[in-house]
Image 1 (spheres, rainbow, N blue to C red):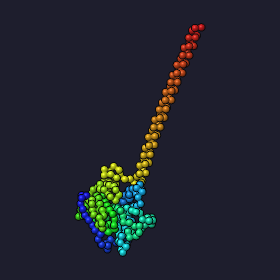
Image 2: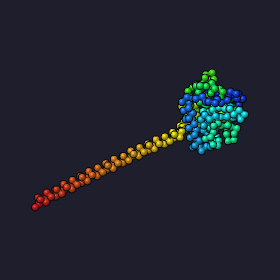
Image 3: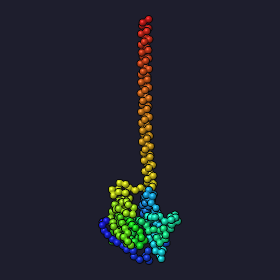
Length: 262
């Protein structure tokens, strides 16, 4: 259903957009997926040497007249990175150096699937976000809102967000120049899914596993060489023993011949 077009404009429903003082806790699986996506993006930022910040559940605010208005993206990619990111408590797009997110990610929650399928897109349109993913891997989305679908992709067009994908992956993301997959959720450099992105921990784990395999191959090669050398040593010892025996036999025959000739 990637061709299904839907547009939301930057509307002013700010009374309903005030962030609560206490955030609603999400499930373990929800948080694990958010951390996984953040780790993939962080690894990409690092290997691309990109001036960017990746956050989880950092408040995004865009109205200086109503600073309590905002949204808490599950994951956010901000470029360029704001100064002193370790001191950030909110991304406030009216402040110098606080750019709207290049990419925001929302994971559909069973606590509020209607909001994730309907209302949050207007907030992101107002926030200036360049691209929005709404991911529903557990398919919580309500049928009354066209759901459930694994992936919604929204991209900016002037002051609006336009839905350009509504279905399963893969789908290309201009925000990161890569492909988003839905079953399971992952990212790849290619539409075939052969060059899958890894987190830094996965890369390190694969490197360690490759090193372990190389060491195992080297150990087996050394063991084979040792066995070959041992076999050669035994062969030489056997040859020497045979030679010594032959020489002893010749000496014995010569002695016997000498005794007969006396």
